[in-house]
Amino acid sequence: DGVDGVRSDESGERYPWKPKSLSELWPEKILTKSGLVDSSTLDDKYLMLYFSAHWCPPCRSFTPVLSKAYTKLKAERDDFEVRCAISCFFMSCYSVVMRP
Image (cartoon, rainbow, N blue to C red; front, side, top):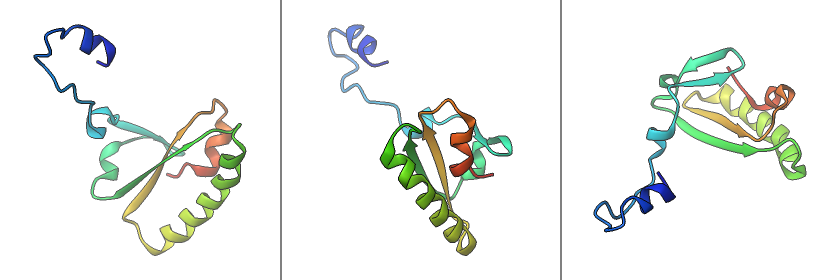
């Protein structure tokens, strides 16, 4: 993929080189507070991806706001999920935003 894919196709026979779709990249299992669950639990739901880092001041300010909004909206409807792509190696960072 990527650069290697372009280099190995010097004649451009496989052009245009298309990036993989989200469904091709998404794992079969996702990590939640409850542990690993099957990604099919997200079928037929709106999916919001939240990219964050514990060392980023705007992220640290926004994460609690997102958590509060998630909790309020989740009480009203169940057709969405927030999944986090957190640049953080400390499990305490996950506790604010990860949901079962």
